[in-house]
Amino acid sequence: MIEIILVNKLKTQLDGKEFDLVITSGRGGLMMAQLLAYGLNIRTVHVVTDVRTVFPSIQPTQRVLVVDDINDTGATMAMMLNKLTGLGVKEITTAVLYERHNVTFKADHVGMYLLHDEWHKFSWDV
Image (cartoon, rainbow, N blue to C red; front, side):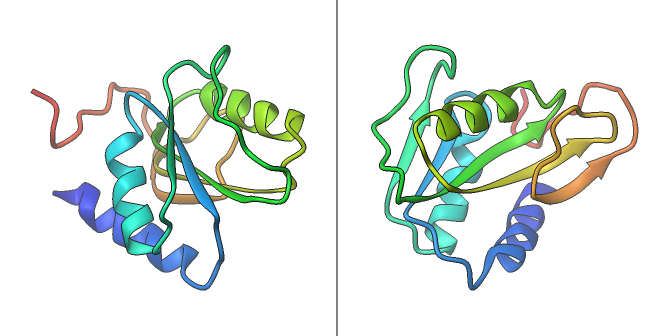
């Protein structure tokens, strides 16, 4: 699966950085967040099912890694970042497996850029 290769690429990009927790969206990012958390020895993973309403309790001093499978439009990442900064979190890093070329919000770390607008099919899509 190419996704495992991309997770390893992200892990290499993030090695040496310290994080207190990973936060991800409940639908797409959960598998990648768990793999990255394990690889980076981050023991806390928060899953957010609706970034507009429900958000876990996070302290402003915590170093947060936001993970998703694809940065399609940038909307989910922007909402998560806005929510975290609204909570006073100062150290936020974003990482995605795939990022489209025309997103409004760009992630800090990207496994692969998508230069087309077609629907991306993941290895686990059935």
